[in-house]
Length: 407
Image (cartoon, rainbow, N blue to C red; front, side):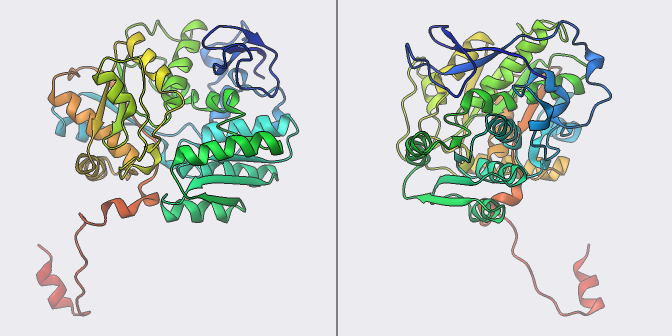
């Protein structure tokens, strides 16, 4: 299994034993898991294994396989989007990484599964999360499988279906009258005081490791080739940073070529785009959005924890940030559904809308190998489309009447 060498601060580079800590004691910077990888890891190490993200267990922070909480998430389709590519201006090599088909219907099954597994291995008595919706469901589902109590801290304005989904797994829901950032603050204090493993706060070093499997899978599904360009929706920014880490680890292991030519685009919704705003203003400071206003609720994180690190990644990978309005998001959702048969929630619509802008502005070449990450299922946020879908026409059960309607 993954052999953890240390937890390393991103800022001052101090290293710590891999215990239950998540902030540097010297500078209060975030901690990342550093591994001592085995020297015999090859491409074919993974080839005959189960088709879940746990196929990469040597690269993940769990010491004993018996502690894995497995809902069979991951190894989701990488779909060649030839029809959408043609519609967007003749993209020949557009791929959709479709994480909407995970067990709880979002990419959050990856980080939640790793974090809950780590909580089980650490013998914690309960887990929880601060969430805009998808993480609530993923954490609650894995907690149910692990037989651990689960506490969800979330703003009251998230989609009702996401609340129902998390409650169905038996989680206790704390609906905070405020923003995601308010819920996050409450969860941090309560988690530390009560000894709860809050997966995206006090277990964050391990939690973010799950998202890097989105890089591992794409590389393997492309026959161990490095894409030219990634389009990644950004809320907290943790997924983008983790995907970059994943590609870097594969390169360090010699499983893929150098990633120095990889380009990254951070996609955010207008109304909650603090990373885009900082990038546009050529600033190193991510100014929080106090009251997010967007239909992309899963990206409505006004004070992104990894926002600064997204900016650094964009500089490292010759990347850019872009935003999409609500109307553009809806257009993106419908474009993906009508061309490739993939129904995404608004976060995916953000990615598609930003992709279209990039093509129109000549920032993506038609021959580039582009991977667009779709992170959640549209059935979780159908209200976003309520005003644009056609209304149903009720007809009598008469064959001639119905036949006359069909062209």
